[in-house]
Image (cartoon, rainbow, N blue to C red; front, side, top):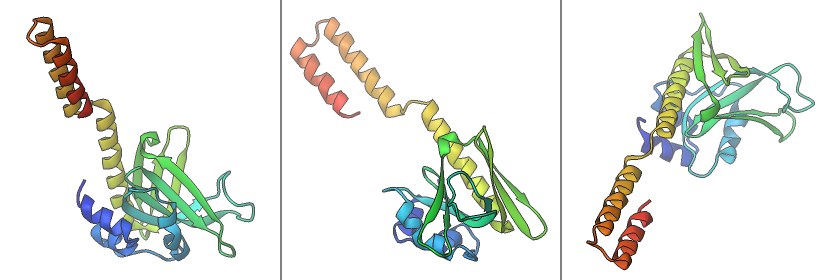
Length: 197
């Protein structure tokens, strides 16, 4: 993924405007200044932010009782998930929705005359973030789909190093069977390879 080290650095510094700039767009904090101020508190250790988009989302079953209708949320695409935050206006409460990347089937972007929309397909339902900056939605969706594809590829294929270590152990076993190694030598060599996993 492009600029991973820079994204990691900006995330650690909570430099959200830097994330927007890295993606080639201007920061959009209209209606989401409170959400941006607490975003870092909701990230896991080593979680990296790739893109941000703010827009209107309908309330969900996890929303505060005092919230009605649709509110302005910030959605952060991270190395692990899409994290959506809605900070209450009159209190310090924050509504969150967290969708793990491996649960997302796809992310779509729609661009209208003035605003855009991001739709996150999680199979059983769609999560829609509407009234977004139209230049932000395509970047968010493209990066999300790249991350999802990367996670799928990683899950589908075992790592090369694990395969090569398994091959090495198999070769050691063949040599042991042929009598090249003693049982003790075989055990020590096998233990060294297993430690590399």
